[in-house]
Length: 152
Image (cartoon, rainbow, N blue to C red; front, side, top):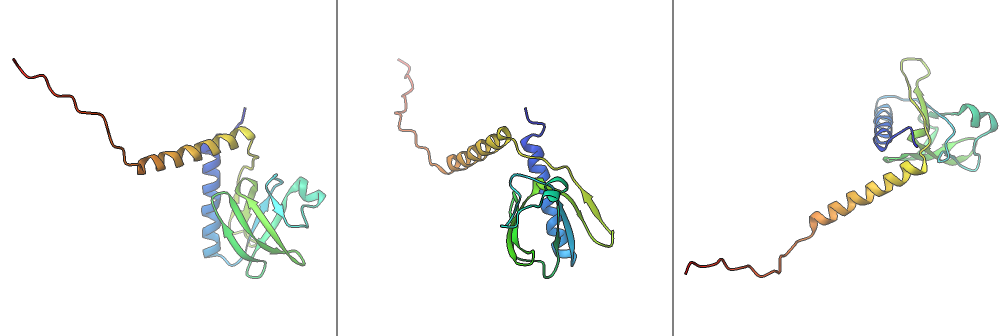
């Protein structure tokens, strides 16, 4: 049984996504401390042994990333580790977001999505799509109308 519900996952993702968007707009440089997660991808470099235990701190500054994109599940971009590497950071893996001067620090829970939550999420998404599609269908009743009995 999973400790986290689909709503927890959705809330966790949306909160981290919102903070990320604000920081991109309002600050020059900030750091994301990401814990080990099965969906965390750090190019061909991968995570070093110590990073698998303690996590990795990624710098988001003027020259540290390019081709930045983000969606409801995470952040993807190329980051410079001596050479440009593709990176994907799932929101569930984000543990801290902070700046060097210590003006702000956000700390979050991290978690791995269990198969149960993932299946529920897919099923919910398919149901929502089906409901939206059903709302677009025009329904016609081909049954004959019954005549009311006339008084005799």
